[in-house]
Length: 312
Image (cartoon, rainbow, N blue to C red):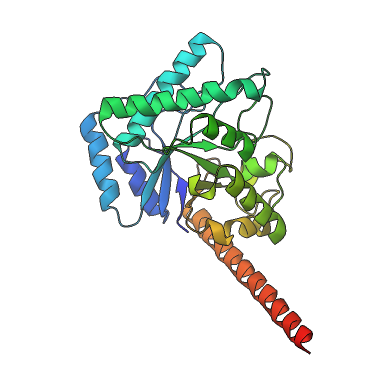
């Protein structure tokens, strides 16, 4: 499993790769524009091409994920907000595609009380519109759009993987639409993965809804708020209410080992993940692998014992 972190892209895109290297990240995630502003960042085409090549050449950071603006709401019925959301998504996706990003992580938005069923088809239509426009304008296959599961506050869309699957189905199962699993959002929405059995149920739920082949990355975060709080509040690993053991059981699940994990933790004073946080993430992952190996060994021993007893 590749493990990395969200890093700042201030000062231009290329320094983000250096920041990733400095903290020992296998993968990084960046904002390509201010996450809380509509105005897009202007990047000359040559800079985007330079980043794409620098990413290909980098031996430490093996992939870059992008995160779309938080302001985007594909479920809104307000014409002005929808137009702004459409423009912002298109810009974010164009930049992600141009730099060769492994995916653009996206919060779908909120139906604002209208009901999720009313938002599914409009959201799917906007995703397809953005992908097709990027490919028509740029001549490249679009970077995947990765729908992120939400913590579940209010009318938030994507409160669970069943809701994300509904959008995927409405989009005809388009090959450039995938998903991102956030461990804090999962916990805040009420999911339990504190035992091997519970963690396995979570993974099986993802498998039967969106499909594990659509899961392109994991946001690895602890939680400042309790399970089922529906509040999006990230904590440093082992300092929150999820805890290292639960995170290990999910991160170490055998069916998730090809999915990169990206830290979005506050670090010290909200400055983002540090090298020490990446080390802790790797320790948690190693602990999870050990727990699953031991669990498989116990199951195997149990079956062998049962077989011997039956033979006797």
